Image (cartoon, rainbow, N blue to C red):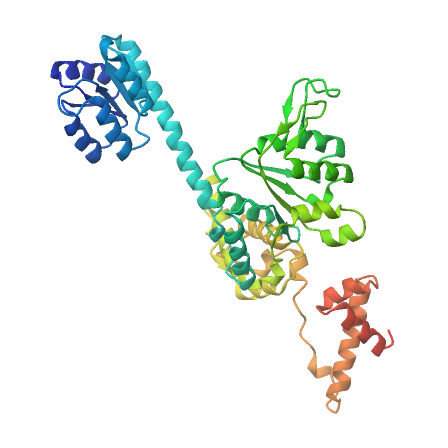
Length: 460
Protein backbone atom coordinates (compact mmCIF):
# COMPACT_ATOMS: atom_id res chain seq x y z
CA UNK A 1 0.00 0.00 0.00
CA UNK A 2 1.41 3.40 -1.02
CA UNK A 3 1.98 6.08 1.61
CA UNK A 4 1.18 9.74 0.92
CA UNK A 5 2.63 12.49 3.15
CA UNK A 6 0.32 15.55 3.33
CA UNK A 7 2.03 18.76 4.51
CA UNK A 8 -0.14 21.81 5.35
CA UNK A 9 -0.33 24.11 8.38
CA UNK A 10 -4.15 23.98 8.22
CA UNK A 11 -4.85 20.82 10.24
CA UNK A 12 -8.50 20.54 9.17
CA UNK A 13 -7.40 20.64 5.54
CA UNK A 14 -4.89 17.80 6.01
CA UNK A 15 -7.59 15.78 7.77
CA UNK A 16 -10.01 16.19 4.84
CA UNK A 17 -7.32 15.28 2.29
CA UNK A 18 -6.39 12.27 4.41
CA UNK A 19 -9.94 10.93 4.15
CA UNK A 20 -9.92 11.41 0.37
CA UNK A 21 -6.65 9.50 0.08
CA UNK A 22 -7.91 6.70 2.36
CA UNK A 23 -10.88 6.15 0.04
CA UNK A 24 -8.37 5.48 -2.77
CA UNK A 25 -6.76 2.65 -0.81
CA UNK A 26 -3.72 4.75 0.04
CA UNK A 27 -2.18 5.43 3.45
CA UNK A 28 -2.10 9.13 4.49
CA UNK A 29 0.42 10.63 6.91
CA UNK A 30 -0.20 14.26 7.89
CA UNK A 31 2.22 16.96 9.00
CA UNK A 32 1.65 20.63 9.88
CA UNK A 33 5.20 21.85 9.17
CA UNK A 34 7.99 21.37 6.69
CA UNK A 35 10.56 20.52 9.36
CA UNK A 36 8.34 17.84 10.85
CA UNK A 37 7.70 16.37 7.38
CA UNK A 38 11.45 16.06 6.71
CA UNK A 39 11.84 13.94 9.84
CA UNK A 40 8.95 11.76 8.71
CA UNK A 41 10.55 11.25 5.26
CA UNK A 42 13.88 10.30 6.85
CA UNK A 43 12.32 7.81 9.26
CA UNK A 44 9.37 6.39 7.28
CA UNK A 45 8.66 4.88 3.89
CA UNK A 46 6.93 7.63 1.89
CA UNK A 47 5.93 7.23 -1.78
CA UNK A 48 4.70 10.77 -2.54
CA UNK A 49 4.61 14.19 -0.86
CA UNK A 50 1.62 16.55 -1.23
CA UNK A 51 2.58 19.95 0.18
CA UNK A 52 1.22 23.46 0.40
CA UNK A 53 3.45 26.38 -0.65
CA UNK A 54 2.57 28.99 1.95
CA UNK A 55 3.57 27.76 5.43
CA UNK A 56 5.26 29.48 8.40
CA UNK A 57 8.96 28.86 8.78
CA UNK A 58 10.16 26.72 5.88
CA UNK A 59 7.74 27.03 2.94
CA UNK A 60 6.84 24.40 0.36
CA UNK A 61 9.53 25.45 -2.14
CA UNK A 62 12.30 25.12 0.45
CA UNK A 63 10.83 21.81 1.57
CA UNK A 64 10.92 20.60 -2.04
CA UNK A 65 14.62 21.52 -2.31
CA UNK A 66 15.38 19.62 0.92
CA UNK A 67 13.44 16.55 -0.24
CA UNK A 68 15.21 16.48 -3.63
CA UNK A 69 18.57 16.65 -1.87
CA UNK A 70 17.69 13.75 0.41
CA UNK A 71 15.51 11.62 -1.95
CA UNK A 72 16.08 12.88 -5.54
CA UNK A 73 13.40 10.73 -7.18
CA UNK A 74 10.62 11.43 -4.65
CA UNK A 75 7.50 12.73 -6.48
CA UNK A 76 6.23 16.00 -4.97
CA UNK A 77 2.90 17.69 -5.80
CA UNK A 78 2.61 21.37 -4.89
CA UNK A 79 -0.72 22.86 -3.71
CA UNK A 80 -1.00 26.59 -4.20
CA UNK A 81 -3.54 29.43 -4.28
CA UNK A 82 -4.12 31.52 -7.42
CA UNK A 83 -1.96 34.32 -6.10
CA UNK A 84 1.08 32.03 -5.81
CA UNK A 85 1.26 30.63 -9.34
CA UNK A 86 4.74 32.10 -9.81
CA UNK A 87 5.98 30.08 -6.83
CA UNK A 88 4.37 26.98 -8.29
CA UNK A 89 6.22 27.49 -11.56
CA UNK A 90 9.43 27.86 -9.56
CA UNK A 91 8.63 24.57 -7.84
CA UNK A 92 8.26 22.84 -11.23
CA UNK A 93 11.66 24.16 -12.24
CA UNK A 94 13.12 22.71 -9.04
CA UNK A 95 11.78 19.23 -9.76
CA UNK A 96 8.17 19.11 -8.50
CA UNK A 97 6.03 16.55 -10.34
CA UNK A 98 3.19 19.08 -10.85
CA UNK A 99 1.19 21.75 -9.04
CA UNK A 100 -2.53 22.04 -8.39
CA UNK A 101 -4.48 25.26 -7.68
CA UNK A 102 -6.68 25.61 -4.60
CA UNK A 103 -9.56 25.04 -4.42
CA UNK A 104 -9.33 21.92 -6.55
CA UNK A 105 -11.54 19.02 -7.48
CA UNK A 106 -10.76 15.86 -5.46
CA UNK A 107 -10.90 13.67 -8.57
CA UNK A 108 -8.24 15.83 -10.24
CA UNK A 109 -5.99 15.54 -7.21
CA UNK A 110 -6.44 11.76 -7.04
CA UNK A 111 -5.64 11.44 -10.76
CA UNK A 112 -2.41 13.41 -10.28
CA UNK A 113 -1.43 11.25 -7.30
CA UNK A 114 -2.00 7.93 -9.10
CA UNK A 115 -0.13 9.09 -12.20
CA UNK A 116 2.84 10.40 -10.21
CA UNK A 117 3.11 7.13 -8.26
CA UNK A 118 2.86 5.04 -11.45
CA UNK A 119 5.65 7.03 -13.13
CA UNK A 120 7.78 6.80 -9.99
CA UNK A 121 7.28 3.01 -9.89
CA UNK A 122 8.38 2.69 -13.53
CA UNK A 123 11.50 4.77 -12.92
CA UNK A 124 12.34 2.72 -9.83
CA UNK A 125 11.70 -0.57 -11.64
CA UNK A 126 13.94 0.50 -14.54
CA UNK A 127 16.66 1.45 -12.11
CA UNK A 128 16.46 -1.94 -10.39
CA UNK A 129 16.41 -3.73 -13.75
CA UNK A 130 19.40 -1.76 -15.00
CA UNK A 131 21.31 -2.59 -11.83
CA UNK A 132 20.40 -6.27 -12.23
CA UNK A 133 21.58 -6.26 -15.84
CA UNK A 134 24.82 -4.55 -14.86
CA UNK A 135 25.43 -7.16 -12.16
CA UNK A 136 24.51 -10.04 -14.46
CA UNK A 137 26.99 -9.00 -17.12
CA UNK A 138 29.70 -7.69 -14.83
CA UNK A 139 32.83 -9.39 -16.14
CA UNK A 140 33.56 -10.75 -12.67
CA UNK A 141 30.50 -12.99 -13.09
CA UNK A 142 31.73 -14.74 -16.23
CA UNK A 143 32.47 -18.27 -15.05
CA UNK A 144 36.17 -19.01 -14.83
CA UNK A 145 39.25 -18.30 -12.73
CA UNK A 146 41.97 -19.85 -14.91
CA UNK A 147 44.92 -17.76 -16.12
CA UNK A 148 43.45 -17.21 -19.63
CA UNK A 149 40.22 -15.93 -18.05
CA UNK A 150 42.09 -13.66 -15.64
CA UNK A 151 43.83 -12.12 -18.64
CA UNK A 152 40.45 -11.65 -20.34
CA UNK A 153 39.00 -9.94 -17.24
CA UNK A 154 41.95 -7.57 -17.21
CA UNK A 155 41.38 -6.65 -20.86
CA UNK A 156 37.63 -6.10 -20.36
CA UNK A 157 38.23 -3.83 -17.35
CA UNK A 158 40.60 -1.69 -19.42
CA UNK A 159 38.60 -1.44 -22.65
CA UNK A 160 35.04 -1.20 -21.27
CA UNK A 161 35.28 2.47 -20.13
CA UNK A 162 36.67 3.58 -23.50
CA UNK A 163 34.65 4.18 -26.64
CA UNK A 164 37.01 2.17 -28.85
CA UNK A 165 35.76 -0.45 -31.29
CA UNK A 166 36.41 -3.99 -30.02
CA UNK A 167 37.02 -7.22 -31.93
CA UNK A 168 36.29 -10.40 -29.95
CA UNK A 169 37.90 -13.54 -31.34
CA UNK A 170 37.17 -17.09 -30.29
CA UNK A 171 35.84 -20.43 -31.42
CA UNK A 172 32.11 -21.06 -31.71
CA UNK A 173 30.47 -21.79 -28.38
CA UNK A 174 33.07 -20.05 -26.20
CA UNK A 175 30.76 -17.21 -25.07
CA UNK A 176 31.81 -14.21 -27.18
CA UNK A 177 28.39 -12.57 -26.82
CA UNK A 178 28.73 -12.66 -23.03
CA UNK A 179 32.02 -10.77 -23.36
CA UNK A 180 30.28 -8.19 -25.56
CA UNK A 181 27.57 -7.71 -22.94
CA UNK A 182 30.16 -7.38 -20.18
CA UNK A 183 31.97 -4.67 -22.15
CA UNK A 184 28.74 -2.75 -22.83
CA UNK A 185 27.29 -2.96 -19.31
CA UNK A 186 30.58 -1.83 -17.77
CA UNK A 187 30.86 1.16 -20.10
CA UNK A 188 29.49 4.73 -19.93
CA UNK A 189 26.87 3.60 -22.49
CA UNK A 190 25.35 0.97 -20.18
CA UNK A 191 22.05 2.86 -19.74
CA UNK A 192 21.52 2.86 -23.53
CA UNK A 193 20.65 -0.26 -25.53
CA UNK A 194 22.99 -3.01 -26.70
CA UNK A 195 21.69 -4.05 -30.12
CA UNK A 196 22.84 -7.41 -31.49
CA UNK A 197 22.73 -8.87 -34.98
CA UNK A 198 24.09 -12.17 -36.27
CA UNK A 199 25.66 -11.39 -39.64
CA UNK A 200 25.36 -15.01 -40.79
CA UNK A 201 21.61 -15.19 -40.13
CA UNK A 202 20.45 -13.02 -43.04
CA UNK A 203 20.72 -13.07 -46.80
CA UNK A 204 22.68 -10.14 -48.24
CA UNK A 205 19.58 -8.15 -49.32
CA UNK A 206 17.85 -8.67 -45.97
CA UNK A 207 20.99 -7.88 -43.99
CA UNK A 208 21.28 -4.43 -45.57
CA UNK A 209 17.72 -3.59 -44.57
CA UNK A 210 18.30 -5.06 -41.10
CA UNK A 211 21.35 -2.87 -40.51
CA UNK A 212 20.38 0.34 -42.28
CA UNK A 213 16.58 0.19 -42.09
CA UNK A 214 14.37 1.14 -45.03
CA UNK A 215 11.86 3.74 -46.13
CA UNK A 216 8.25 2.94 -46.91
CA UNK A 217 7.98 1.55 -50.45
CA UNK A 218 11.74 0.97 -50.78
CA UNK A 219 11.05 -2.55 -52.06
CA UNK A 220 8.20 -5.01 -52.37
CA UNK A 221 6.78 -5.67 -48.91
CA UNK A 222 8.19 -2.48 -47.34
CA UNK A 223 4.77 -1.25 -46.23
CA UNK A 224 6.18 1.06 -43.54
CA UNK A 225 9.38 2.82 -42.57
CA UNK A 226 11.69 0.66 -40.46
CA UNK A 227 14.68 1.76 -38.40
CA UNK A 228 17.79 -0.38 -38.76
CA UNK A 229 20.13 -1.70 -36.10
CA UNK A 230 22.49 1.26 -36.51
CA UNK A 231 19.72 3.69 -35.53
CA UNK A 232 18.41 1.48 -32.75
CA UNK A 233 21.91 1.37 -31.22
CA UNK A 234 22.18 5.17 -31.11
CA UNK A 235 23.90 6.31 -27.87
CA UNK A 236 24.49 2.62 -27.07
CA UNK A 237 26.48 -0.27 -28.55
CA UNK A 238 26.07 -2.42 -31.66
CA UNK A 239 27.22 -6.04 -31.46
CA UNK A 240 27.96 -7.63 -34.85
CA UNK A 241 28.30 -11.37 -34.26
CA UNK A 242 30.04 -13.47 -36.93
CA UNK A 243 31.30 -10.30 -38.61
CA UNK A 244 33.57 -12.42 -40.80
CA UNK A 245 30.45 -13.57 -42.67
CA UNK A 246 29.63 -10.06 -43.95
CA UNK A 247 29.33 -9.90 -47.76
CA UNK A 248 31.88 -7.62 -49.42
CA UNK A 249 29.19 -5.11 -50.45
CA UNK A 250 28.05 -4.71 -46.82
CA UNK A 251 31.68 -4.44 -45.67
CA UNK A 252 32.11 -1.37 -47.89
CA UNK A 253 28.98 0.26 -46.43
CA UNK A 254 29.96 -0.59 -42.85
CA UNK A 255 33.36 1.00 -43.38
CA UNK A 256 31.68 4.19 -44.59
CA UNK A 257 29.40 4.27 -41.52
CA UNK A 258 32.40 3.91 -39.20
CA UNK A 259 34.21 6.71 -41.02
CA UNK A 260 31.36 9.20 -41.37
CA UNK A 261 29.01 8.14 -38.54
CA UNK A 262 26.01 8.63 -40.83
CA UNK A 263 23.71 6.19 -42.59
CA UNK A 264 21.04 6.26 -45.26
CA UNK A 265 18.06 3.94 -45.03
CA UNK A 266 17.41 1.67 -48.01
CA UNK A 267 15.33 3.73 -50.41
CA UNK A 268 16.23 6.96 -48.60
CA UNK A 269 18.42 9.91 -49.54
CA UNK A 270 18.78 11.86 -46.30
CA UNK A 271 21.87 11.16 -44.14
CA UNK A 272 21.05 10.16 -40.54
CA UNK A 273 23.70 10.71 -37.88
CA UNK A 274 24.30 7.75 -35.57
CA UNK A 275 26.36 7.48 -32.39
CA UNK A 276 27.21 3.95 -31.31
CA UNK A 277 30.12 1.84 -30.13
CA UNK A 278 30.88 -1.14 -32.33
CA UNK A 279 31.68 -4.51 -30.79
CA UNK A 280 32.32 -7.27 -33.34
CA UNK A 281 32.95 -10.98 -32.89
CA UNK A 282 34.24 -13.71 -35.15
CA UNK A 283 35.29 -17.35 -35.04
CA UNK A 284 37.42 -16.81 -38.15
CA UNK A 285 41.00 -15.62 -38.42
CA UNK A 286 40.30 -12.26 -40.05
CA UNK A 287 43.98 -11.69 -40.83
CA UNK A 288 43.90 -14.83 -42.97
CA UNK A 289 40.60 -13.72 -44.50
CA UNK A 290 42.25 -10.41 -45.46
CA UNK A 291 45.17 -12.24 -47.10
CA UNK A 292 42.74 -14.38 -49.10
CA UNK A 293 40.81 -11.32 -50.26
CA UNK A 294 37.60 -12.26 -48.42
CA UNK A 295 37.67 -9.40 -45.91
CA UNK A 296 38.62 -5.77 -46.44
CA UNK A 297 41.92 -4.82 -44.83
CA UNK A 298 40.80 -1.25 -44.06
CA UNK A 299 37.65 -2.54 -42.33
CA UNK A 300 39.68 -5.08 -40.37
CA UNK A 301 41.84 -2.33 -38.90
CA UNK A 302 38.74 -0.24 -38.11
CA UNK A 303 37.24 -3.16 -36.17
CA UNK A 304 40.45 -4.30 -34.54
CA UNK A 305 41.19 -1.18 -32.49
CA UNK A 306 41.26 -3.38 -29.38
CA UNK A 307 41.17 -7.16 -29.43
CA UNK A 308 39.75 -9.51 -26.78
CA UNK A 309 40.27 -13.26 -27.18
CA UNK A 310 37.81 -15.68 -25.61
CA UNK A 311 39.83 -18.86 -24.92
CA UNK A 312 38.57 -22.26 -26.02
CA UNK A 313 37.45 -24.59 -23.23
CA UNK A 314 40.37 -26.95 -23.92
CA UNK A 315 42.69 -24.03 -23.11
CA UNK A 316 41.13 -23.48 -19.67
CA UNK A 317 40.24 -26.95 -18.45
CA UNK A 318 40.72 -25.84 -14.87
CA UNK A 319 37.40 -24.00 -15.22
CA UNK A 320 35.45 -27.16 -16.14
CA UNK A 321 34.48 -28.02 -12.51
CA UNK A 322 33.23 -24.44 -11.95
CA UNK A 323 31.19 -24.52 -15.16
CA UNK A 324 29.74 -27.94 -14.35
CA UNK A 325 28.59 -26.78 -10.91
CA UNK A 326 27.13 -23.59 -12.38
CA UNK A 327 25.12 -25.46 -15.04
CA UNK A 328 23.96 -28.13 -12.57
CA UNK A 329 22.56 -25.41 -10.31
CA UNK A 330 21.02 -23.54 -13.23
CA UNK A 331 19.18 -26.47 -14.79
CA UNK A 332 18.29 -28.16 -11.49
CA UNK A 333 16.59 -24.89 -10.47
CA UNK A 334 14.72 -24.72 -13.79
CA UNK A 335 13.66 -28.35 -13.42
CA UNK A 336 12.30 -27.76 -9.92
CA UNK A 337 10.49 -24.60 -11.08
CA UNK A 338 8.90 -26.49 -13.98
CA UNK A 339 7.64 -29.33 -11.79
CA UNK A 340 7.12 -28.57 -8.11
CA UNK A 341 6.09 -32.18 -7.52
CA UNK A 342 9.39 -33.58 -8.89
CA UNK A 343 10.24 -36.57 -6.69
CA UNK A 344 13.58 -37.58 -8.24
CA UNK A 345 16.87 -36.96 -6.43
CA UNK A 346 18.46 -33.58 -6.87
CA UNK A 347 21.65 -33.73 -8.92
CA UNK A 348 24.65 -32.72 -6.82
CA UNK A 349 27.74 -33.33 -8.93
CA UNK A 350 29.75 -35.70 -11.11
CA UNK A 351 31.14 -39.14 -10.27
CA UNK A 352 34.93 -39.31 -10.24
CA UNK A 353 35.32 -41.53 -13.32
CA UNK A 354 32.84 -39.42 -15.31
CA UNK A 355 34.64 -36.23 -14.23
CA UNK A 356 37.90 -37.67 -15.55
CA UNK A 357 36.31 -38.23 -18.97
CA UNK A 358 34.86 -34.71 -18.99
CA UNK A 359 38.27 -33.28 -18.15
CA UNK A 360 40.09 -35.30 -20.84
CA UNK A 361 37.55 -34.57 -23.57
CA UNK A 362 38.64 -32.00 -26.20
CA UNK A 363 35.31 -30.06 -26.22
CA UNK A 364 35.07 -29.05 -29.90
CA UNK A 365 31.77 -27.32 -29.09
CA UNK A 366 33.33 -25.47 -26.13
CA UNK A 367 31.20 -24.13 -23.25
CA UNK A 368 28.00 -24.45 -25.27
CA UNK A 369 28.61 -28.19 -25.69
CA UNK A 370 29.33 -28.58 -21.96
CA UNK A 371 26.16 -26.68 -21.06
CA UNK A 372 24.04 -28.85 -23.37
CA UNK A 373 25.59 -31.98 -21.84
CA UNK A 374 24.80 -30.90 -18.27
CA UNK A 375 21.24 -29.91 -19.23
CA UNK A 376 20.78 -33.37 -20.76
CA UNK A 377 22.21 -35.06 -17.66
CA UNK A 378 19.94 -33.08 -15.32
CA UNK A 379 16.93 -34.28 -17.33
CA UNK A 380 17.98 -37.94 -17.71
CA UNK A 381 19.98 -38.69 -14.57
CA UNK A 382 18.17 -40.60 -11.81
CA UNK A 383 20.86 -40.38 -9.14
CA UNK A 384 22.64 -37.66 -7.22
CA UNK A 385 25.74 -37.84 -9.42
CA UNK A 386 26.31 -37.74 -13.16
CA UNK A 387 27.83 -41.09 -14.08
CA UNK A 388 29.54 -42.40 -17.21
CA UNK A 389 26.21 -43.90 -18.27
CA UNK A 390 24.72 -40.37 -18.35
CA UNK A 391 27.36 -39.11 -20.80
CA UNK A 392 26.83 -39.07 -24.58
CA UNK A 393 28.62 -41.55 -26.84
CA UNK A 394 31.23 -39.10 -28.14
CA UNK A 395 32.58 -38.71 -24.60
CA UNK A 396 32.15 -42.29 -23.44
CA UNK A 397 34.28 -43.56 -26.33
CA UNK A 398 37.20 -41.91 -24.57
CA UNK A 399 37.23 -44.73 -22.01
CA UNK A 400 40.57 -46.43 -22.60
CA UNK A 401 40.72 -50.22 -22.57
CA UNK A 402 43.15 -51.90 -20.21
CA UNK A 403 46.39 -53.03 -21.88
CA UNK A 404 46.74 -56.84 -21.72
CA UNK A 405 50.22 -57.12 -20.22
CA UNK A 406 49.85 -60.91 -19.92
CA UNK A 407 49.90 -61.16 -23.73
CA UNK A 408 53.34 -59.57 -24.01
CA UNK A 409 56.25 -62.08 -23.98
CA UNK A 410 58.41 -61.90 -20.82
CA UNK A 411 61.60 -61.37 -22.82
CA UNK A 412 60.13 -58.57 -25.02
CA UNK A 413 62.17 -55.39 -25.12
CA UNK A 414 60.55 -52.15 -23.92
CA UNK A 415 61.43 -50.06 -26.98
CA UNK A 416 60.22 -52.68 -29.45
CA UNK A 417 56.98 -53.19 -27.54
CA UNK A 418 56.25 -49.45 -27.24
CA UNK A 419 57.00 -48.98 -30.94
CA UNK A 420 54.59 -51.80 -31.85
CA UNK A 421 51.85 -50.27 -29.70
CA UNK A 422 52.49 -46.79 -31.14
CA UNK A 423 52.40 -48.10 -34.72
CA UNK A 424 49.14 -49.97 -34.07
CA UNK A 425 47.50 -46.88 -32.49
CA UNK A 426 48.57 -44.70 -35.43
CA UNK A 427 47.14 -47.21 -37.91
CA UNK A 428 43.86 -47.30 -36.01
CA UNK A 429 43.65 -43.49 -35.78
CA UNK A 430 44.38 -43.09 -39.50
CA UNK A 431 41.62 -45.58 -40.28
CA UNK A 432 39.18 -43.73 -38.02
CA UNK A 433 40.11 -40.41 -39.66
CA UNK A 434 39.79 -41.73 -43.21
CA UNK A 435 43.55 -41.18 -43.70
CA UNK A 436 43.22 -37.45 -42.98
CA UNK A 437 46.34 -36.64 -40.99
CA UNK A 438 44.92 -33.58 -39.22
CA UNK A 439 41.96 -35.57 -37.84
CA UNK A 440 44.19 -38.52 -36.90
CA UNK A 441 46.50 -36.17 -35.00
CA UNK A 442 43.51 -34.81 -33.06
CA UNK A 443 42.40 -38.36 -32.16
CA UNK A 444 45.90 -39.18 -30.89
CA UNK A 445 46.30 -35.86 -29.13
CA UNK A 446 49.53 -34.94 -30.92
CA UNK A 447 50.54 -32.32 -33.49
CA UNK A 448 50.29 -32.92 -37.22
CA UNK A 449 54.04 -32.54 -37.73
CA UNK A 450 54.71 -35.10 -35.00
CA UNK A 451 52.30 -37.53 -36.61
CA UNK A 452 53.95 -37.01 -40.00
CA UNK A 453 57.34 -37.94 -38.56
CA UNK A 454 55.94 -41.11 -37.00
CA UNK A 455 54.25 -42.11 -40.27
CA UNK A 456 57.62 -41.87 -42.03
CA UNK A 457 59.35 -43.75 -39.21
CA UNK A 458 56.98 -46.71 -39.48
CA UNK A 459 56.70 -46.60 -43.27
CA UNK A 460 52.94 -45.93 -43.13
